Image 1: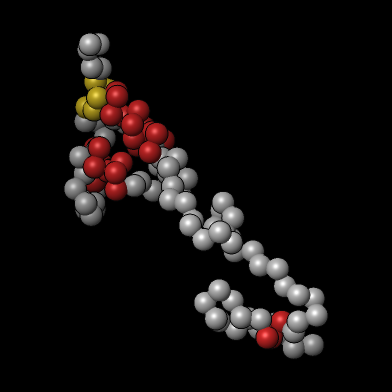
Image 2: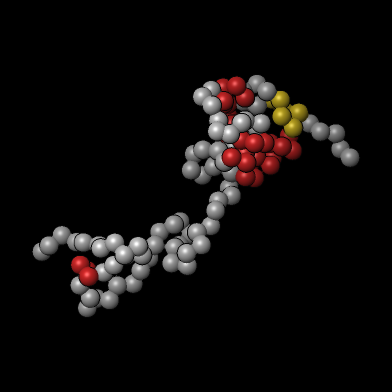
Length: 106
């Protein structure tokens, strides 16, 4: 069993661990030992604290995880694509939640 290495957290390390949306997940904050919901100043309180390097690696791995859209019509970024019949009037098209889509009148 290899010895655990401790590292001191910096502002840059915390910023590096952000998700693609610019924040942190609940799981990441749990590994940082930040209570949920995080209170004001939680990041400032972490700077300079020691953390296991293995834990920090786990936190970095979690930054790229995201929940997948389960609807088959959504693409990987979350956009909904639908095919419209060119013969159909746009004002008659109903969206996925039966909301009417309106285009400006000509």
